[in-house]
Image 1: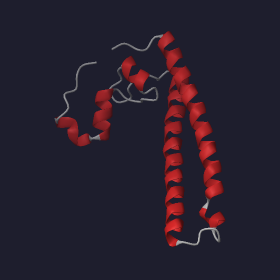
Image 2: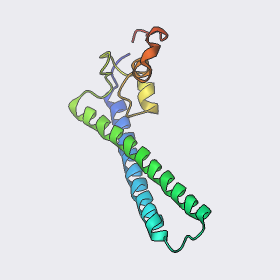
Image 3: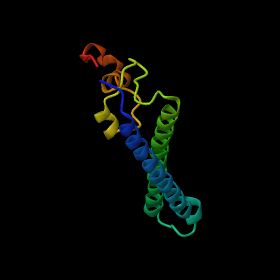
Length: 133
């Protein structure tokens, strides 16, 4: 596999920038909505235990969604740092280029598919046939 071309890199950076803007808007929107629906603000309004449990569950779901989006945002920011320092598209584990098809699907990908599999499941080392890049 070869490193991404300048044109491919430009396209990937544009995708990262676009997703970053989308996430920042979603996070801000969900934080506003969570603040409005905050349990403490609903004291006196929600009298039924089932309603209270529903409100608490809804807030937990919103909070979890924001946490997930913050993690994705951190991955995007890390990818943009790699673009800046010239290491974007290079797997830190094996040192080889990450396949452009993988980056197109997942622009913040830090590792090649094989190394990512091993990173997520170290027990698979004996099961995964690492193909030459």
